[in-house]
Length: 423
Image (cartoon, rainbow, N blue to C red; front, side):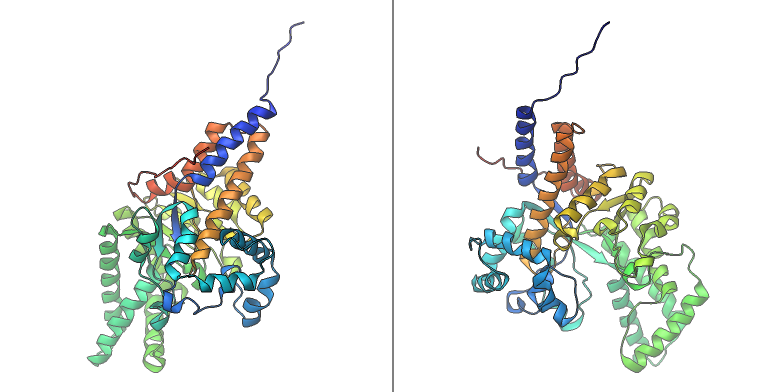
């Protein structure tokens, strides 16, 4: 009776491969495909630093409860190591030390270990007015990276600016006409989006429709409903001076205009999947994805907690891509690994991209990069020990998710600056 002998790698071979993988994971350059600007030095303490590790919005949640989260304990240890403060430094000591550093030095200390080569910055963060001036311009971040920073245009912010300007003009002329306002708004929004699409500084468009009215976006918005909403919007603006796009028909309309322009011009569209939980599943976007097959759609934030649904859409539709950002550092280490495993269940690895979703503080870039690299390594390590992945396959995944996929999706044309560490 004949038999077949199957040889398997020795533990020594696997450990050697893992050592090689570790070098790539922690040293390969990355493209941060979705982030926000850092606070200006004069405003570096404008917001509680605890926002780095929690999304709580109450005063107590930020200043008291956040200190007792696993995310805070982990961040304290990682920042203590970065700043060489020793193992016993607590959160308050970390805060005091970072405030003592010259600000640009702090930014460089935090950014250099991340290996971030290029940042795509959403510079339309909804702070508004004087608050927006607290942030550095996206070009300022070039001093911290090897390649120029690019913009992501937030379409709701752009639309609100256009509406406000047109309304001010009509009010000044004492000729407020809803129908004419809607026509002019559509023309100007389309022209502005087309101009942005032609701008080499712009990498793509982003919608926060999920925050405003949910992801069940109609592909045929009701024109009559939109005109009625415009009338209400005019009345609120004239009486209170407030203009915010938060009505479904109008928000759906803006998304459809953007999807068409993005598809025609070849610029990706990004979408947040947060808040209003029952309306946040990316599965609700299926009709929109099918209606605009030429428009590349990037689902942000791992679509957490709907990661599997997002992975399915990424696998089934050529024009859908999946970002796994923001879970660093808010989700526990086990949770981060589980999200990554869910991302990899179905989604092709040439359609997955990483981001920090960093905000305000340079430390958010550091933690977002460090924790993502740790999670990727641990998930790849587990698969390699089970002989589910070879070293070349694992290295290929790492290079794609950190650099190559974003480089291709956003047509950045970059070459990676990979400097192999000395042995």
